[in-house]
Image 1 (cartoon, one colour):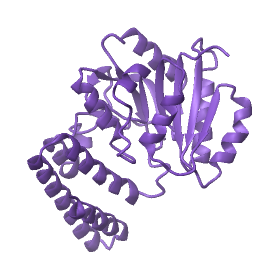
Image 2 (spheres, helix red, strand yellow):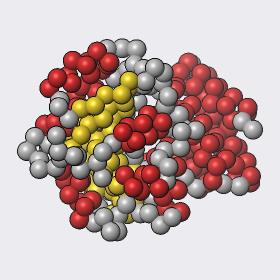
Image 3 (tube, one colour):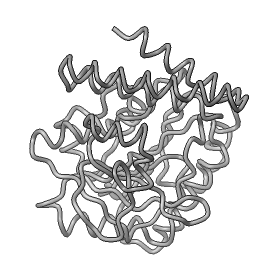
Length: 299
């Protein structure tokens, strides 16, 4: 087998059907490609049919390698495992709940290679299942940006996350579709394994910017992204986002900024709890009671 140029890393966890769809779409997208590639799937000890499905589909995927963990080690650590196994010069991280549209992988790879002296990390355009744009890049979460996200519907106004119609440099792109050179990823020691899930790509690209590695968004390569596919329900991702904010600020900001962040997170939680109780919305109340507690216990 020819040594791969591109290594595609996919992390799965209880996503049997979406993982299969993702892999089939990768194979279809690259059916006519001249790019030598491999696919590395890292399964985080799925308890559904994912592992059996991977074993079954592997017979028709000569480029596929499968790593099966005995526990859920988290999204970042599992991606690091896949990257360490990769033989390609380039790494493409794809979420297991993505579906590649048409020749999107070839497009994003070609664009990256054409601009790799100026761009070091590149994200494609993510779409919701109904093909509407999914906000998937944005500015780093400074305090004003966090305020916009929590209280001003920042995504709606393009203050926090957006989906530009033209290629452009940005602070960060979604880790659901992230292309880079393996050497850059290794220079940064990969994803911070202290982040279990959510915010790991923002931390990675924040560290990248500190050493003058640039990130860009490329809208002509399109991928459907379901989102929250392995979370089961929305309480878990909200809690992980809260934890991600706290971890990020502990790591990169001073005590005053951390204090302001905590105040905003708790205010958001209190307001959501009040609304939840007025509307008798058990999900909202439970989610933000747990989120408030996370901030209160943070030291």
